[in-house]
Image (cartoon, rainbow, N blue to C red; front, side, top):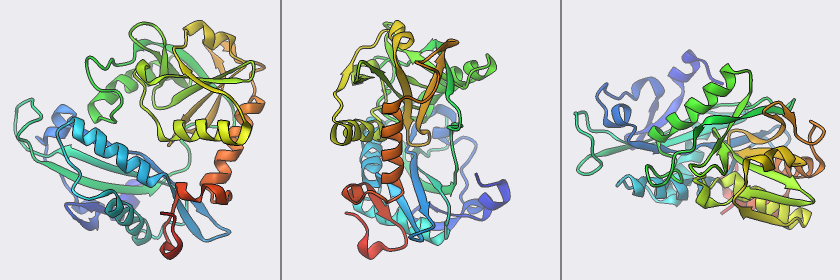
Length: 318
């Protein structure tokens, strides 16, 4: 990832124009900072040395979800989805990225005052892009644990939106897991069913069927989650079932993996010190992972619509 000096001089999109990261400032009393009244997206870009091209993955889908998140917080994106696709590609080109990257668009309440509310508060929009390698170490399986923290419930705050303030729920679970010797946490819903990881959706394999918690389990309906389900059905001919999943099913699963924009697809080797299957990557996880990697690196023409090209915009997917 970019260091402080490199980040300071990078180009971002803020206040409707391109500028240096160091020139984009917010005040200490900014509403989004003080009260968590903002939302964001995480978008990956994959560099291909062979094609000398940077592929942005599911750019349109991410901005459509950001628009929904913003609406929940009584905000509206200042640009259409088409405009945001073009702005993001332009931003990456201006930074001359020739590496894998992570793009963080965000919209937040920008009033500088004291008062908890959503109404009558202006908002600001920005996009930051930076070099990015991996969120989880996928060279070995993830050692996960079931967290003592429960997933935030929709009756308290909307977990289907990527709202900045809600991520304290994930941060508490993640740090608890790491401080106890694990790599990642699995959160349960308020009624004790499996929800998701601290920043990833979760999938289980048992008897040839792929299972994942349904949206009623307070999950973030992930773009990568949707891609995994499509790959499993279309490429592997696998049944995908969305339903409530009990904690003990984690221990009985033959394979488990996380999916997410930052994490990609990462297999789980153990949960609560119990091995998942043989403790190594299972065959279905491997096939899905390999297919996904080919797609995001531009090597599966059938999925070209999932990608936006940065440097060859004349032939970019629409």
